[in-house]
Length: 191
Image (cartoon, rainbow, N blue to C red; front, side):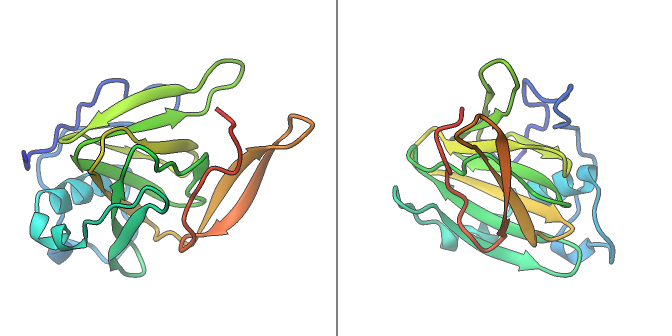
C-alpha cells in the first residue's frame, strides 16, 4: 500500500463543492488545534491517519449485509472513522448536516455519486491513494467498487445528525434526519 495520498483526484472541484488539494504539513492527532477544522485541515488529517495503518488495520472487517465501521477518535471538534466496503455496501443519498468532511481511500476503490437534477448522478471512482474534502452542503452516495475497500473519514464539527434522502410517491425529494450512529443505507432506488 502506498502511504502517500494523491489529493489531486480527477473529477474533483467545481460546482458540487468537493475539492482536493495538495497538502504540505499534515495535522495529526497530537497536533489538533482546539477548534473546528476547515476542509483543508480535514483533508490533511484524513491523509495523515491514512498514512498510519497501525491506527486502523486492527479494525478492518467486511460484511456484504452490513457495512463495517469503527470510530477511531472523537472530541468536541472532530471525529475520525475507518469504514470497510464490499461491492454490496451502499450509503444511500445523504449529507452530513453541519459537518464538513474528508475521505481518504487506503485500500481498493469507492464510487462517489453526486446527486444531479434532470440527469443521471455523477459517479467518480476514488482509488487507494486518493483523498478529497467537502463542505456541509455536499449531498452524495458512496458505494464500494472493489471487494476489501477501506477508507478513512474525518468530520468537523463531529457528526451528530445526518440527512438521508428519498423520493416520495409524488416525485418530491424528502430529507430524513438520522443519528450519526445509525448505519446509512439506501432508502429507495433513487439514482
